Image (cartoon, rainbow, N blue to C red; front, side):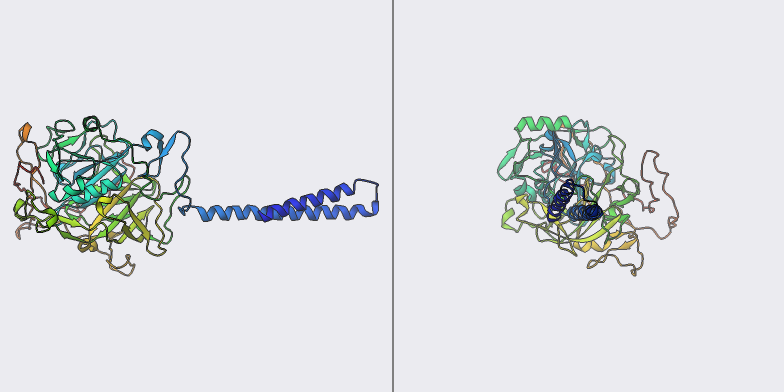
Length: 508
């Protein structure tokens, strides 16, 4: 501003000087006045250039700093709070829908998943077996089949609540009931949720497909979700005070982790499903692979791809019915053959890694309040302490148990639990997964469609069996995929395991 004022004053001075020279002709002074005018013009040009440089510096300092708050939306548009992208204003104000989806091999392909905005993935069983995911959509319209879906855990409900989402699932761990009682719960089963009994929604919102066997064939649809909302008059607009869950770069800006380390191949350590992400520099997205193949949406054939990945290290314990808070639960410690339910700590904070555009940085995370409060989990650059800024687009959260953190692999190097990958560290690959799976049970009668318990086991190679060649290559990638599919590691044979089934609880 001072330089602009000075430029104005110099311009005025030049004008006065020229005007003064417009009277009686004085040849002796003409050359002097011309020189003075040239000097003033040069000074003004220099001042203007300095002012432009200052403006550019101010813009550079403000880029992706997040200090500007939420980006103003164009007319008729609103900000998708999960991706930072602009959508129709009415859609932007809509409550999201969240659904618990299992990762057992029998469940693939999943349907409708490629259009989800945010995905959470975490171990499900007490033995660290198959993970279970939570997919969250802002726009869940126009889908005839979504899922499949299985039972929820406490942490699934807590994540759904962070987004003020309607929460769909087919049964639940009893330890999730206190959290479910505080939200609009769309359970398929009739369960007493903290004293509030919701009738089963399986005949309204859910259906069983004929191409798979129970419990792997339970799905919902856009129409089913709509019917459930109308049945219970659920709120469809987000709470007035809800803002964007994360801090996003503004339109035209890109977050480049220039001080980060390379991250083009990311293995989050869920070895039971051979989960992996591959970065495609052509579109800047990370493509998802499971069981050695592209993770494609059964509804449209598209491979799941995200812009951002968060690896979140968490501590954990196990729930017990000795806790007075869970007294009187129908399934006690001996139920499900003594299986323990994970109690993942979502509030104490810890370490993590933020990955985007082929780079990664170390971060920390923390969450204010308790799980049931629905406050967002925030991530911070470990070096600067500043809250991270996400690139616009989808985000996948891999929530890793603390004693599995050393299984995380980035660009063929294991992640040290206390530091980022070091170039001096020897390259390691993930251990061959002792693959586990579920075997479909017989089709249930229509009136008793519930979930079942899985008893998992591992497989050991017999000495006389020859080892599978390490050079075996994967099938060629599908032509429609923008990212080439790398050759997956050969996988051991998957054992056929029968499951216990409890129609009373319908949980698994």
